[in-house]
Length: 237
Ligand SMILES: NC(=O)c1ccc[n+]([C@@H]2O[C@H](COP(=O)([O-])OP(=O)(O)OC[C@H]3O[C@@H](n4cnc5c(N)ncnc54)[C@H](OP(=O)(O)O)[C@@H]3O)[C@@H](O)[C@H]2O)c1
Image (spheres, protein in one colour):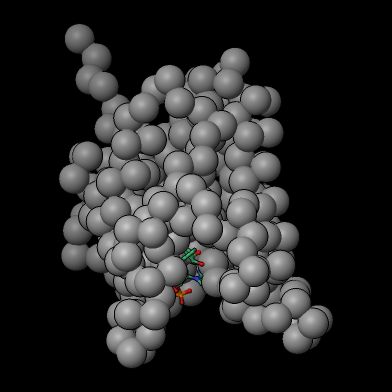
């Protein structure tokens, strides 16, 4: 009798915050994990392989896929979590900032997702998740979000397009849209103000996002969806 191969997930932006939480979450599900970011350290866990690199660089995507196949022999899930967007008024963005945002969020998604989906097609299935921002799909007068809307709104539409194109091949694609999530890199002094921007009156926690992604991982009849984990922001202002 053959053995069932263990599933494998790639997590980008895995050195800290939500990405680090996702690595632990997928390990709890029993997945082998390929964790990547520019500064990620080697893991003590033999079932986590780490790859350092800028996700905007196509060479990083190739190394991530190679590492996953060499260590585990397959790829079943990808979470496009890595990225950063500075909130600024639209007229204040420099060309360099525009380049940086589009290259990390859009090129980063394109290169790695393309290679991952090609692999998934060879085993007849898989799941891709985009981590995006909730305000990018419902602009608000009190948050400057044009560049986030351009990058993450694009990813939200691409999530649906990917779902449609590959549903018949057993590949699902979903997005999780974040409100403001507690982050140790952010000064504590801002947290009260940020919490008040959510109808539920609190910041999101990393586990709120991990729970949402793992729900989608197991939700075999859900594709093309955006799950808003945003304390009610998307319900209206
Ligand atoms: N926290 C929030 O309130 C919030 C709200 C909406 C959306 N988001 C998005 O959700 C995701 C996770 O949020 P978070 O709070 O965990 O963010 P975070 O603490 O800033 O972590 C971002 C991760 O992305 C990696 N990264 C950034 N630029 C990269 C690049 N060019 N190449 C490769 N890796 C890169 C970072 O690692 P290295 O520095 O090692 O490369 C890090 O692991 C991010 O995309 C963020 O923009 C967050």
